[in-house]
Amino acid sequence: MKKGLLVVIGGVVFGVVFLLSFCLSQADATLIGVRTTYASFYPKISYDGGGLLKYGKTYTGEDNLLVLTADDMRYIVGPGDYDNILGAVKHTVKIYVDTTGNFIGGIPGYDMTEIVTADDGVTIRGHTYSKGDTLLYAEVVEFGWGEKEVDFIFESVGGELVDDGLWPYPPASAGYATLDGTPNWSSDFIIGSVEGKKMPTPESSSLLLLGTGLLGFGAYFRARFGRKK
Image (cartoon, rainbow, N blue to C red; front, side):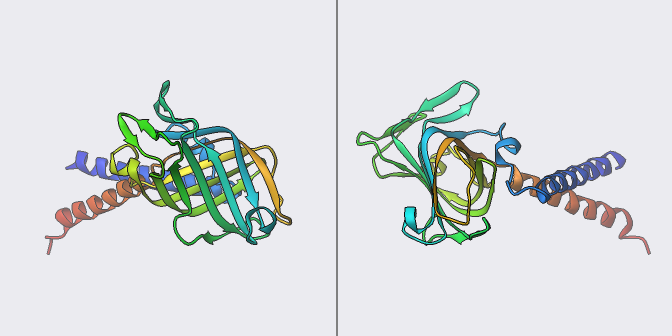
């Protein structure tokens, strides 16, 4: 019984410590911290060079609209293990951000998409996708920015990769882009994107661990003390 209690307490403590440390790490930062927090998680989709971050009516056609576009480079399942998708898939994120850099909300439809653009399609892990297929779609639920970088948290993730078991959901996904310059929200801008990746996050499983630990804790004390008169 004592051993079981220790396991339950350990689960609760781990979940609480993880969530608190994550929240505290974001308290004094405008960036979410995707690039450093989730670097070890797979699968990933990377894009390197050639992307653009555009903001405002001059470059997007709408006030407060932020648009990130890039050509994907690799679908990565582990160190040195990847499929080359360069020139075959277009990554797009569209959200609204106010003139201080605060996230307003998403667009009608999906905020993030990964769409096949190559005439002859693309093959990923033996699955072949045709031009126009949506490999991933999602809603942006959190946005961050800092010096030469922006990052995102994605929820409601779906698409061909999810359907084929090549991208997990749940949990949530995350993405980032490093830039040639730092956003200046007081005016419209266009900035080159140097590098970017998206990957799954551990948030849902951590919340599950915390919830399971709390339920187990309650069950233990109910069984241990509930029958006493």
